[in-house]
Structure formats: C-alpha cells, structure tokens
Amino acid sequence: MIIPQPGDYIDVHTHGANSPVGIFSVENLMAHEERRPSDIPSMSCTFGIHPWYLTTENHLRLLDSVKEAAGQKNLIAVGEAGFDRLRGPSPELQRSIFESQAVIAEKSGKPVVVHCVRAWDELLNAHRKLKPEMPWLVHGFRGKKELAGQLISRGMYISLWFNFVLRKESTELIRSLPVENLFLETDGSDTDIRTIYGKVANDLSLTVAALKEKILANFMTFFRGSAKILQDHE
Image (cartoon, rainbow, N blue to C red):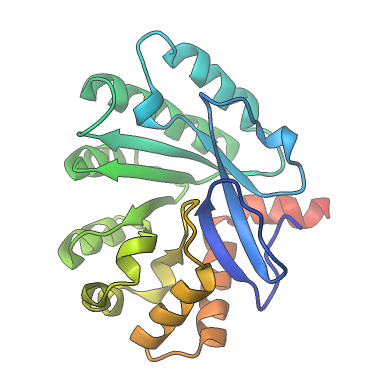
C-alpha cells in the first residue's frame, strides 16, 4: 500500500519501517546510503541529501542521485534536506545543496521535507528567495510556538519531534498549531505512533479518530501531486 487509507495512523517520517496493519509509514531514504525508492516500490518514500552526510567531495554525486530518484512514482517528496549548525559542512555548501534540492522538487512537482537545527534564518531566507509553489514540511520540530508561527505563515507544515511531543511541556505548542498544518512522526525510533496520536488528540480535545481524519486530509493536501500519481497508479 503506497497511499494511506481512512482510519490509518500516518507516520510521516520514519526509517526502517515495519508497520503493522493500520499504520501507514513514509520511509525516509538518504542519498548517501545504498537504498533507493525503486528498491521498495510498495512503500511511499522521501529521498534527499541530509546535511550531516554532505561533503565537498560527494555533493555532485549525491545531487545526481536525487535527480534520478525524483521521477520514481513512490517518491512522494524530496528530503530530508536542510541546514544544521551543529553538524555538517559549511553553511554555504548546505545552502547551495538545499536550494538545488528544492529546485528539483519544484521541477518534479513534489514537496520538500526539511531538516533544520539552529538555522531557522537560513531556512526562512531560502523560502523567501525561492518562493516555492510546492509546500515544505519541517520534520522533528520542537521549537517555540513563535517560531512555529513564522514557519506556518510561510505556508510550511510541521511534524513534531517524537520525544518532545510526549512531554507535558509540548501541550502549549500543540494547542497553538493549526491542525491543518500538523503531522506526526516516529523518525525511526521505538516510539509507537499510536501513543503519539493519543497524546496529541488529548491535547487538542479530539478523539483519535478525528485526529486521524485531519492528518489524512493534511497528507492528501501536502502530497497532493504525488498522491494523485499514486492513486492513478494503483
């Protein structure tokens, strides 16, 4: 199954998924690794250059692999791509390769999944510069509600960090977010996506079933071009 069904829990960003029935996982593949979307045609994937594994020696080769993968039907977004001030090459190289991936996403009609650590100005500046038509999703978010508001004002979506979302202190942020811009993830951890849904539904005073409906609607909006291709393909 490569598109979610009504009633599914959607894990929008994970690694090495082995999901039971009722959980729809988007597998994140990274360009420096061997696996490609074509290796797992029955799963929806994202594929991109993670800044941690970007170097001056490999950047052109990795970009070529993203270009090659962009046309795969089960490749529903480019990324995770982005910026990291704590780990990775120079800010200049990170910026250049992120922008190149965003352009690939635009040309292929697919959104972007973003990794960003302490580099929010770079991300916001890139969005202002590129003015993308395809939406961007910031995965693993655990920042302040004011920052979330800035990202959402640019039309971005937010997926909450699996560890942070289960803490009591996340409740204020969760309640401040428009549910129309919200996704949830496990990022390859042992955390159960069903537990995350339960916590977030409680924070929002929703039933889990209602939260599932809303996030499914978000999926079909955010991945609108890719979801249409997948529906036609099935």
